[in-house]
Image (cartoon, rainbow, N blue to C red; front, side):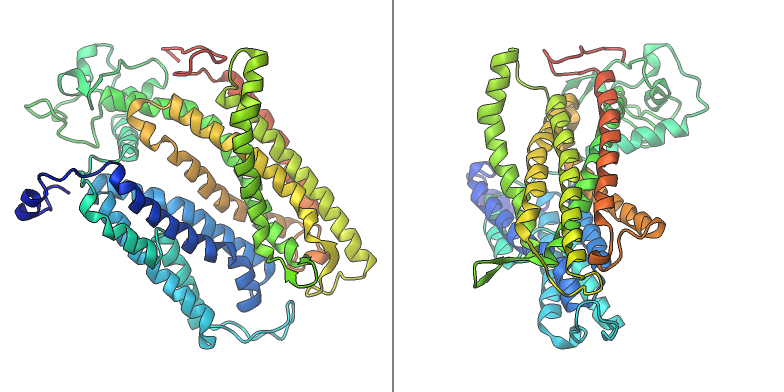
Amino acid sequence: MDESLSHADISSDSGRRRGGWITFPFIIGALGGLTLAAGGWISNLIVFLIEEFNVNSIDAAQISNVVYGSVCFFPIIGAIIADSFFGSFYVISISSCISLLGIVLLVLTATLNSLKPQPCATGSKLCQPTSALQYAVFYTGIAVASLGLGANLIGMAIFFSGSRFYKFDKPQGSPFVGLGRVIVASVRKTSLQLSTERKDYYYGLDGVTNNVAAATLSKSFRFLNRAAQKIEGDVKSDGSIAKPWSLCTTQQVEDFKTVLRIFPLWSTALFLATPIAIQSSMSVLQALTMDRHIGPHFKLPSSSVIVIVLFSTSIFLTLIDRSLCPIWQKFTGQLPSPLQRVGVGHVLTILSMAVSAVMESKRLKIVQEHHLQDQPGTNVPMSIFWLFPQLVLVGIGEAFHFPGQAALFYQEFPMSLRSTSTALISLIIGIAYYVSTGVVNMVQRVTGWLPNNLNNGKLDNVYWMLAVLGVINFGYYLLCAKLYRYQNVKGADGSPDPDS
């Protein structure tokens, strides 16, 4: 913060320009350290749990999904803390140190035999159980690394070396906190009779909020208007808010209404990402059972199959922007809307689940032909390359629906929330990984499709189930898209409705 800098620091740096592009190399360096550190241990977590900690395969996949969810979810909490209390620099610094501590614990777990159980054959009932201490050290490392996700040692060094160039802004408060205030204030005033007089509502100091003209309250979700309705003691003598959790500005109320209007579309994205999360972990388990040899001397790591998704997404992002969108514009006269892009992503994800089911049926047929149902540690004579089509499809789907969602949220959210609108994508992914663990648990309890030995299971049925659920969710998406009226996107289907 500016107040935290000493007088000497301020005077000595008065002539030095802070912030701007000069900080770019340091931030990129820190981000590179984050990617290498996090990507290395997270992508190999399932294999490590199975082969080094004697964890059952489905349980390992579940743990991995929880970790992935935490990695996506915790940074949002960190952003709220940074915006509300400490500022970005201090939160990044603290979380980087926490992350480094977690990675150190993981390194110790991987290198010290005393922190791991004795190795045993996959699926063996004679495996030595993991001790409480070993679990404690390992899970502490995972939790701490996920909680403070934000650098390894090199990334930290690069980040701190640029501290003299950073601009230390005073925290202005998180928009998410503002949304929470609307809920609390409206609930507190449930018994308050709604007024029809404009003077009874709070529009901010001089009718302006954050340099934006105060909004007029709309007729939709009228019960929320109470959050901006003034009662005795809500406003100070200078016109400012006396009780932040009892009174909000009309702009904050309208911002929250915007979030509510887009929530149905956001929920369809959640159910779109959940099958992808399940497919991601199950693909690694499938790869462990397949022939991973490339030539006579190289064996492909099973966890690396997920890289295919990243490659296909990266390639098709370029193709979509440079080729497909211009072609679409040539024939229709306009670029595809965000909702249309997301819709294509839905279709491709459903197709990916169907291909996954067909591929798994083929794998299980080979298992039965070679009588490998009761031999969990034996590789099925089927190449890992059979997994690539489904992963390529889901990657192409992500190239459509994730940018489409980001564009939709950014364009439709009000100005005060646009800086955090893209955080909804991370929130979707994080919650989807959590939901995926619940879906897998339910399938395990209700059916016999997911035993720890996939060779003796029916994973193809799980994929067919996900495909069917995807079709249902796509129908729900089409309904939501049909009923949704764009607020800020001109020229797209549906017109802005001031009273909607």
